[in-house]
Length: 222
Image (cartoon, rainbow, N blue to C red):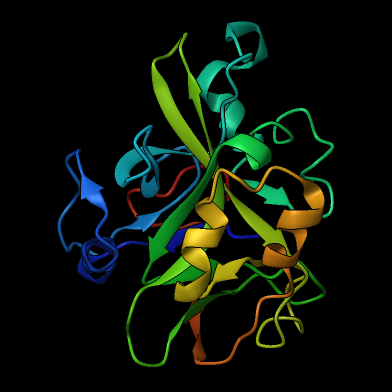
């Protein structure tokens, strides 16, 4: 899974490089790590076909979610969407066909989910320090007047497979327009874009982590 990610100035620059219209306030270069239920910048196509940037909750809240289903905190269960089941799950099956998005990140983090002591987290970034794209889906919930998103995951890249069972789907720059293309409306067309994520050009850093000494913006999810 993709449990957290970092969006710093390089991620904003990535938006500008791809001519994304920034129509909302985005945080500066504070290197804040984003966890589920926190604001995350993403881009989608607007009705005119231009790319636009928004900030939504990291954790999908479909339009049919109400207070009885947990309200915005429903996103705690939907910050990742598995490519193997995304076309069947009620929370994701409409969004994958109609509401795809891209998320610029400078790095993402994984916590071990195999037989490895939970004493470290692992930071994955590009060797050149540039930002890159994660494949995502988005929703708007009118009851809470909120946008939200989920990052799509696939089988683990070789960089993390020893300690983690999933990796986010990373899109090459050349795949962005195809991924956002509203003309793609079938599983057959979309599945090839959610293939195994390559770790080429990426680097892994191991960081000590103590759940008793979390960063100030880290929720109780971990």
